[in-house]
Structure formats: C-alpha cells, structure tokens
Amino acid sequence: MKKILVTGGNGQLATCIKAIEKEVTNLHIVYTDSSNLNITNSESVDLFFSENSYDFCINCAAYTAVDLAEKEEGKAILVNETGVKNLALACDKYNTVLIHVSTDFVFDGYKNTAYNENDQTNPRGIYGVTKLKGEFAIREILTNYFIIRTSWLYSEYGNNFMKTMLRVSKDRNEISVVDDQIGTPTYAIDLAMAIFKIINIETNAYGIYNYSNEGVASWYDFACAIFDECNVKIDVKPIKTVDYPTPAERPKFSVLNKSKLKSNLNISIPHWRDSLRIAMRNFNSN
Image (cartoon, rainbow, N blue to C red):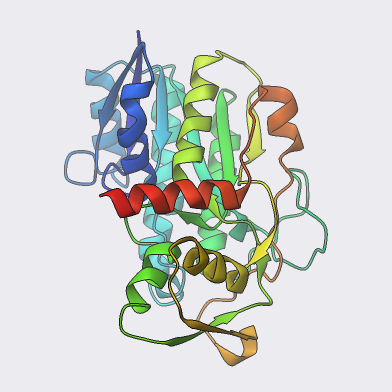
C-alpha cells in the first residue's frame, strides 16, 4: 500500500482529494495543514519526514490570494517558494516523489494559442513569481517530481468563482463579469482524480504537466454557464478588464495545452461544461 502525504489539507484541492479518497484503493493518505506541518520551517519539515515514510507528497499548500500578494510578498514567498523548497529537500532526502500543484499565472498571457509546458514563463505579479520560483526550487533539487500547472480551479468546496457567483446572485439581479480574460475552468475533483491516476500508474515520466478541463471560456462565459446550470435568472453584463481594475494583473489568455499529459500519462480530460454540471449537481445536493 502506497503512503501519501497531502499538505494544505484544509484547502480546496486537498478537500477534493479527501472527498474522492474512498474511490481509490491501496492508498493510505495523511492530511496535514499548517497546524501540524509548517512547511515554511525546514527543521519541522525534515523532522516530520524523518518520523514517517511516504511514497508521494502531494503539495496542495499555497498562498493563493493573488491581489493581496502584491502587498504581502513576504508571506507569498514563504509558502510558495521557501515552503516548496523545504518539501523538495525532504522528498529528496527521504526518497519521496513530489507532486506539486502550480498555476497558469507563471505565464504572462500574451500568447493567443494554448500554452505548452516548454513555453517561456513570464509572470506579471507576485503570486505568479513566487509560484514559478517554487517550480525552480523543485527542478533544482529533485529528479522524481510532477509539477502540475492548472487554471481557474473551482468545486463545491472552499472559496471559488462558482460559489461566489451563486452567493451574489441571491441578492442581486445584475452582475458584471470580464469577458476579455480567456482560459479554462478546472473542476478540482477532476484534478484530484488525475493526481490519483498519476500515482497509480507508477510512471517515471516525471516533469512539468499542464492540467485543466477541456474547452475555452472567458470569465463571462463561465458565469453565464453557472447561472444556466442552476436556472438562475440574472442579467450578466460583459465588461473589459480595464473596467474592473485589480492590484494584480491577470493573464489575458491562459488556455493550457494538455497534449503531453494525455500522451505520456494516458489521462482523459472532461470538458469544462460537463464537469460544471457535475459540480453544480453535487453542490445542490449538499
């Protein structure tokens, strides 16, 4: 039986991993959060790994407050760079395969075709910079790793765009959403399933991989689809990014090419609309 460590245990992705854990056999999964594993402290990380033996570490811990990171650069560095480096050093020392979740924010969004894993990175904000530096640390330290870049993560758990749209629609009859940022919504349950598949196929095709759902959308498209799936009548108005300024710059285009993941790891990927339908059904049944 493989033993798996999951960091960031209270976050959205880790919660999704926990939700589908029962569907996966021959895995013993241990969940941690900052209260029992402070990844920013190298001594604590080393001690934790020395007392336990893990085949895989799934790093779901991250500083993800994209706008706040512009003011809290130190905190973002601690979690997204220093913490990742500490985990990579421990994984190297204790023979653990690291599966690290990264982001489309490592790209600047100036392309107009889907990004592949070898495209030039050029993050435009502190969040993206610190996530990219975390990737660099892994690549410098480890050989046996999977870095999974994903985008627009949502689910029935945690805080995310889908739940925000549903919440604001309860007391508003009109909402404005940007339509000139293009990417792909990714159902966190699908990503969790893909991670389990990587573990179970026992591959040594290590490296960087893109994972998002199939298809292309703007945030406006995503919002309209959410309301369509739950039959909410609300006037969704498309606006431009310039009309909705934020402290951190978002990639204008961050569609991810998943060819490498599909060919190397033989993982099938659902379309984002199909997954949204499932997410909405699960959310409404809770």
